[in-house]
Image 1 (cartoon, one colour):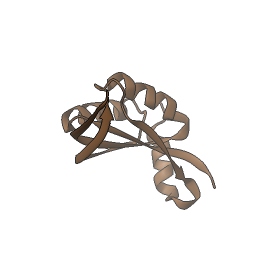
Image 2 (cartoon, one colour):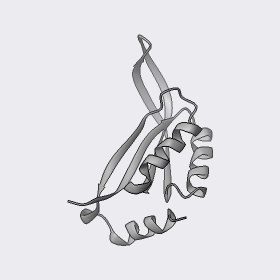
Image 3 (cartoon, one colour):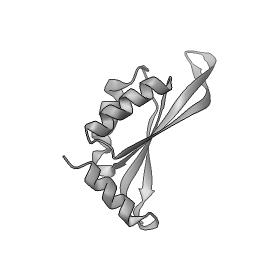
Image 4 (cartoon, rainbow, N blue to C red):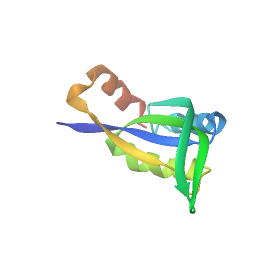
Amino acid sequence: MSIAHHWIYTTWPDAASAREAALKLVEERLCGCANILPGVESIYSWEGKIEHEQEVVMILKTPASSSARLNARIGQLHPYDTPCIIALPVVTDASAPGYLAWLAQQTQA
């Protein structure tokens, strides 16, 4: 099983902040594509309280070699103190080769 790409899963407080960050991340070629999925309800514990918030999920697609730089940049752009940034491995041999080649081209400087 080969892992050469990641999907980076992150949540944002609203679509506007997610969109602004996604545009920067694609323009900076840290990811080839960003999907913004609104309407997510998040329930979590924060500072001893159970919180219920509406959030936006963003999925960023990038080569594994770009994940650390992408994650650091998300941290700079993100309004949360402790943003959710999770790298999910993409199994290369079970994915569309043409799409993965396109993704690699989009993230080359």
